Length: 205
Length: 180
Image (tube, rainbow over all chains, first blue to last red):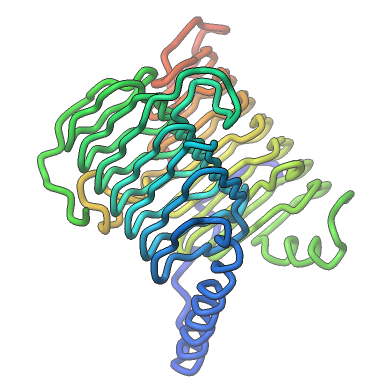
């Protein structure tokens, strides 16, 4: 293969799927969904509360709960390629609202309080830690974190101690959040600053 | 291929649209090819200690050129077109995507993918994120942890979030070419 010329490749088209195959595929997805909801109860057994239909869709999370971890309903944790980490110290509280989706490699560490609203999306490898050392038995002063409803954190966003992210805000990839971000804006950079306001209200929050 | 079950290796090779000579990988590489995934000669992908994954959606075309090296924990996703040209080197945990997966302000809308191109001999450091629509020129160097979203001119060194030019290694001969 000397030169890559994509124009010579045959066009890729969506494959035509027969009706029985479609039904079989949907049945397989439904069975997988049911199975994951059941095994999730085992994976999330160290949480203090887990709402209905909350599930680990792939892989397994690492839950080191010495305080309180409360999960709402219909939460999706996808730990497919790297594990998701939830750690709390003796007085730490992690609260995650309904319909929040958490991607692989995310890490949540709490020695005071990490409160996440409903319908929040976390991209892969996000880090949310309310203590600067990111350890449940460190010595730095923890400051509570609040992430409001409908926030979208893209890939590899780091949320530092004392942060507050307003409703419907989007934080761009690779950003570091410290302090307060208003609602309905796009913010990014290290440290994250407001880039522009979002015109539309979030469709789901 | 160390650390890979022979059956798993066969399954990965079978899922590729075309593959050149000496393609090798270490660890549990995840390949999900529903479009076209073309891999050139002497390509090496690391997938240990953290899995790398290459996901090509229906209608997507990913092309990985000759002699490309990809570090572990890499996340390559393609919905329209991703081209990694010959001799490019990707560090560990590099993320290349041609779609944002969500629309800012409207969670359930699906955004239009924008093709990505990594130029010949470009070097991407560890933890680099390449966002949709990025074009990285020939021989460019992207510093560790950078986020690239626009055009990186050939032969430049860029760093930061968002990536900005630090210096010019060699005189840029041309703008990165248009996406085929």
